[in-house]
Image (tube, rainbow, N blue to C red; front, side, top):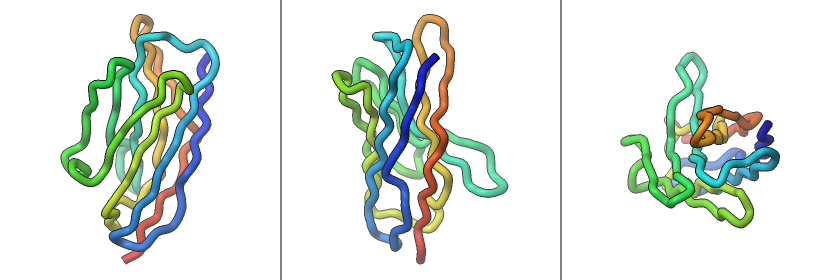
Length: 117
C-alpha cells in the first residue's frame, strides 16, 4: 500500500498563486510517476501534470506555461506550483502515485482549489 498526504489548497483570486504538496509513504517503488489530477463539479477527473522518477514531465495543454510540477525524490514528495490561476482552475486536486512494474495506482484524499474572479 501507498499513502499520499496532500496539502496546500485554498481560496485565491484570479492571477494569484498556490503551491500544492503531496508526500508519499509506504510500499514505494524506485521507478514511479507522481502527479496531479483535478476534478471540477460535473466533470471527469483529468490529468494536470505528472513527473517520473527520472524527471520527465507531462502537462495538460490548459496549464502549460502557468503550472510547474517538481519532485524531491529524497522526500518522496511531489509539488505543483500554480501561477496565474484562473477561475476555470477551480477543482478538487488529487495527488496520484503510479508504481512502474505492477502499475498500481494510488490517490490522495484531494484538496480543494478555488479561484475567484
